[in-house]
Image (tube, rainbow, N blue to C red; front, side, top):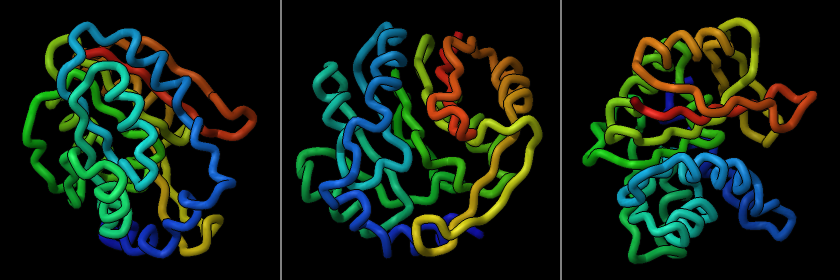
Length: 199
């Protein structure tokens, strides 16, 4: 599946994040851990920002000037209604040229939807968009080997890919990053996340 197809799928399921049953604290503790490593709190970017604005609110509260990007038109429309004063972009992260350098970038439950062959390119792009000592947090499939799959757990079929834990680590070391934290935060599910700092 291409990112545009993922966007169309998410257009159909915005209600899952708007219902009262959505856990709005999802990812917040992990982001606070990542933000603690940030030296300069100026520009920040939420990749795959979705519609809830929970990370945007957190970043504002921590003194950042955040922006958001998402491939889903409906997610961006809802995000703009919640935060009319924030800049949001409806873009495919695989093709989009980031407009700024950032001190903090989040890609929570988002870039695992991009094609497997685009993972290295997109992560390299995100690291390149960080200022010196900037921090990236992103969640991934915590698999041993690289691979991809599809499922329809949320309704429409969506695609997932992962470089595998050692694949991610090898890439980040080659890009001059320090791994500040890695965790299976929903164990025994293979949901994992990295906190990386650009040296």
